[in-house]
Length: 292
Image 1 (tube, rainbow, N blue to C red):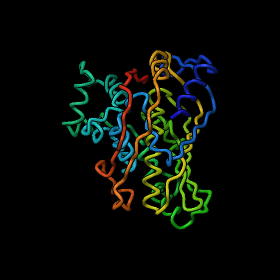
Image 2: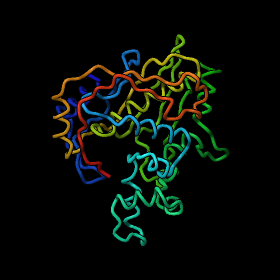
Image 3: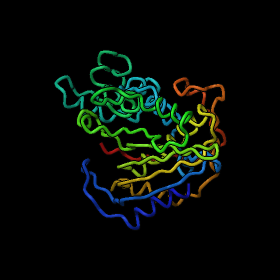
Image 4: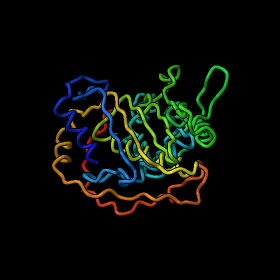
């Protein structure tokens, strides 16, 4: 994960101080790229413990086309809780509930979850049911079929950025587009991320898209090769600097290995139990606040 550490160092050394939507403030660079050869190991950060289960559960949630946080909450995944909670606090039904109260209601009250756990047409909706003027497109399944039947295509693309629907989303897509590339029996994937929270978000994004690459490679009978992470606005929030310096002082450890259940041949059939992470020995977690 040396590439990731260099990305952080680049922001610290060359970034520009910028105001941002959340009011927290950032140090930011524009335009960066990291490449991860999956033959070197699964790119899960070792200089701080990264919650692998949350990464995979969220990815499966995207793949199933989900846009409500209830399935995540039931699995103990907290990634998306802040946005609907902040929206709920502005509603007339808010009566001083804490975040934990809100999460418990989402988990146990289906009607409440349907009303206050919905994020709008975010990633899963765009991947699986992108709405055009004349038809709705299941981009993910179509691109998998194209990889099988037209591997030389330069149109192996899934796009989550749907301008007419942006204002209906709790958060517009940050990792907004990805493209596959087939050569010599190997499959690579490049993702473009318009906005990248360098400390909290990017390690999740790297692991998530690397896992997606492995999954698609398996169901298309190809070997996973390279994940390329292309970033627009890469930033460290002002309240993350101490955490970043702590991380950069730590020594990297060998990357783990990720194994998939080889029996799964349909992207929609994967469950969390089909993923086995081996030899992950990270440094302790480093806590930091999410800016909403």
